Image (cartoon, rainbow, N blue to C red):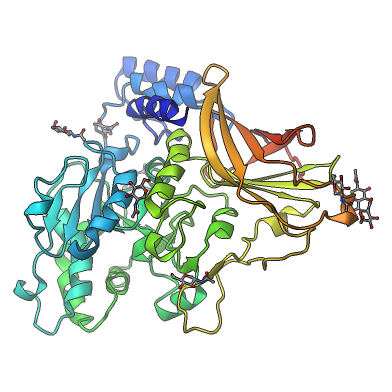
Length: 485
Ligand SMILES: *[C@@H]1O[C@H](CO)[C@@H](O)[C@H](O)[C@H]1NC(C)=O
Ligand SMILES: *[C@@H]1O[C@H](CO)[C@@H](O)[C@H](O)[C@H]1NC(C)=O
Ligand SMILES: *[C@@H]1O[C@H](CO)[C@@H](O)[C@H](O)[C@H]1NC(C)=O
Ligand SMILES: *[C@@H]1O[C@H](CO)[C@@H](O)[C@H](O)[C@H]1NC(C)=O
Ligand SMILES: *[C@@H]1O[C@H](CO)[C@@H](O)[C@H](O)[C@H]1NC(C)=O
Ligand SMILES: *[C@@H]1O[C@H](CO)[C@@H](O)[C@H](O)[C@H]1NC(C)=O
Ligand SMILES: *[C@@H]1O[C@H](CO)[C@@H](O)[C@H](O)[C@H]1NC(C)=O
Ligand SMILES: *[C@@H]1O[C@H](CO)[C@@H](O)[C@H](O)[C@H]1NC(C)=O
């Protein structure tokens, strides 16, 4: 079932210009203007919800203009992925999960040339480059710490490939997963002709104290506009020389960019994942911003139970192929007849609480995860967390994403979430003894034809909750000034 859908989605994706966020195309001719008006009028209705299927068909409108202000799309990005030969075999599935062969542009930089067992290099992966040997670079002295220097120099090595019409260089590790549709939409908001350094700091306050609150953590991935990279091409080696004993490439870059007067633009959707073990609580309470990246996959448990790490990432990608705008976005609604709260992290998990819990509490991640640096006593995060609880009125029933299908003439997406294991707690008695133990499955209906606006939210209704073992949650646009409490 899911596989027939994924082929359907991949067909749709081919024609899909995912960056369509309503920015007008620059067209010069009169006929172009007419088509432009058609596009605006019919394809971008004035509310926040744009029909997805109509967005798909924008490719029939002329986007061929090469003026510098045309809408940013996937071909304007060059990726620089930095890996090491030793770990490449285990990291390869992570790159494969998001890389779109012959569509995404970019390079994988390894530290040494791979042996014959890696040849020929497959065409479904980023083209391979071997990083320049830092010790042989005439502009660098022998005192330079070679590992961070190699990693940060991938920026200028990618630049020297000389790709045409590049607006953004996006750098990441071989264990960084990017969500391309969301990434394009976010980058399209910024003027690529200006200096931009876009990324995110760490979830862990301690990591930010160790480095900087104003540094983009490289594992989360970050984007540099073309003019920034052009400036770095001339300056980076002198920065490396200055910070020759620095161990962290991200810090060298941050300090070099500060010299150029370029400071970090924070986008919360980049995720360094400086945490360990079970990240399910974190992934089940994401802020309302497009989910852009995910990292440290080998340091954490598989994100879905009873799957290995790469299987789990590919499983999340089934939902990501259908609708990245909603992916992992938290939607909360209440069912009054049972006094239950529902919290859905679209494409990932669904929680039922046998209690009415305010949204201001539910948006705090349950602290299922442990700290990144084991030796550090304090572990604070840049967001509030909720402690795990065995109070039946506080502990959720947990369901995980299982499958996805299109219904109603492809107008509606149905994602199904199944119970992980019995909760093993009594009923919450203070709210009326309405047990959710019998529920095995939650179906979430969301529109296939309207994408969630960046920073926007959905509202939901519980269609039925207590009649059967299946519960249905229906997404809809929020009403004006709707209060959900
Ligand atoms: C991206 O936009 C450019 C114009 O700036 C256009 O030439 C190119 O075909 C577009 N690529 C895709 C994949 O839409
Ligand atoms: C990418 O394009 C090349 C050349 O057109 C082709 O040989 C190759 O099979 C394509 N690879 C994939 C994975 O589509
Ligand atoms: C983008 O920035 C460039 C350089 O500062 C400027 O010339 C151009 O007008 C800007 N474009 C938009 C759409 O603001
Ligand atoms: C967390 O994961 C590490 C391995 O990465 C493991 O040694 C440790 O026991 C785990 N801790 C918990 C609380 O599960
Ligand atoms: C993960 O599971 C997939 C599918 O079952 C399998 O092909 C792959 O080898 C497994 N990976 C690891 C590291 O065990
Ligand atoms: C909901 O919980 C309140 C107490 O919080 C209780 O007074 C009320 O009767 C419950 N409603 C139902 C339908 O059980
Ligand atoms: C719920 O069940 C408990 C234990 O059986 C009982 O003490 C409590 O009064 C019940 N509450 C309601 C609202 O029925
Ligand atoms: C728990 O709830 C179920 C269904 O709502 C009810 O049948 C059962 O009696 C409750 N248990 C207690 C101990 O009240």
